[in-house]
Image 1 (cartoon, rainbow, N blue to C red):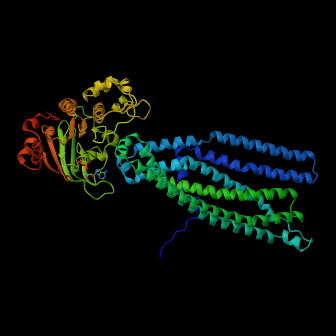
Image 2 (tube, rainbow, N blue to C red):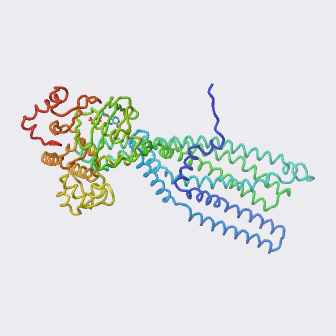
Image 3 (spheres, rainbow, N blue to C red):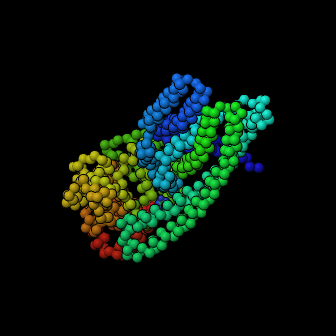
Length: 630
Ligand code: ADP
């Protein structure tokens, strides 16, 4: 038998996600929720001050009380209104606006994303969380929208509490004796219990319909999430100028337009069905509430008629009941919206609770002037998170700083993955990577990473100033930036740019400059040189370069890299031939390792790869191709 654990009632009303999100918001900034809640509690109170005071004034006038005592109540009414208005204004001033909350939460989200282990960031779940964060923020207001929902819910809840408090004496009025059976019945506790029972039943049935409505609204939101995603994708395809070339040359506008129309048709059919359903459920709620309201009014009238309550109390009870129902309806809507918003903002809670394992190490990396670092892969195997296939399979070897290592092998053999593990973007599934004999996990992550300058094959430059791109920082040493650009062979091109190092790359703003793939690759190389790390890694560093630039870069590599450790990945066998060590990757394993000469003598895989490339070049051409370490 299934052991069902029932949720406590409050969890059925306020979802656990909403509570968790409130805690998260509170951890962002301690002032957001208290001010929002306080302000709404007071706003809920405001109308009741007038209801109570008006009832007292009316009773005073009917009872013929002195003008002074009536004026006293008027003064109280004015003062209380003034005090509440001032307190509300103060809390409104203290409270964070929608925009403030948006900025705070966005800042926290960005900080978190930047601190996250790359491995975590690349996981599908994490990417889904980020996508959901963007969707919910755009569609439902995200955290700022949730905070406003909390405020509205609090206001409705306290309105109910205050109105119920005002209604309470009504159920304990005195029973009128000696005025006949009708007077007795209407003023006796039986009638109060009866009306209370009808009120409770109407609330109960309204709750059932509201839950039904919540489910429908949730369904609608879920569906809308899907079609807005599709709409956004079509919009992205159409609006991004980089897509324009393919759309035009393959006449894809018809395909896009039809897809766009289809999404629109499906969406409007669903929306009209949903609106009708919501209307029907809303109608049922109004009917149910209307059964209890007339009964209550009749009883109020009768009790006043038979003298069980004063005329002023009629004002109080009628005002309290109408406010009770109004707030109850609002509370249900507000709760639904708050719970749904929290449900969709759940991705924020999950995002902030992702464990960051890379930052556990504390050991400082030994700073060595002699650059005597030794790196070792010890029986390392690796499969990407969420996959079974071993991309690296029991890889073992050592290399020293100062030496030049080349990684060769077919596409997909695992070379880039090897580099990602070396730089600790991922941790090995099995085995260890050691720096000077110590597991790299034990080192401080930031310090360990500062050992490497990598130019990945799919490197990215950003739409910032060129100088900032090279220095990877807002402030930079201009001379060093120029030096790196010159070494990478793009200094003269940058000097010809009107804004020089201040030139903004790409088109994020009005004045962005488009650069070619080859120019971008040179800037990426300059960035790696500016970092001046002891280990420089170049993954297919010249794939986007023209033959002349490639020649220039290759012939300069030796001076660029100087006494640093250099690890190269290249498809040009000849460019690797003067490296101290060449590791031949095949299907996730290091099949062969050694110098060019020793590997050629072996007549194994390296020899085959060399020979197959040599077929396309004359011996002279093979020799002439510049090498990394020539
Ligand atoms: P190489 O650099 O030798 O061309 P890679 O190391 O880039 O090879 O890729 C090796 C294998 O790992 C490929 O089959 C590739 O599809 C797979 N791979 C690369 N990145 C990922 C990833 N993030 N998730 C899953 N598989 C990946």
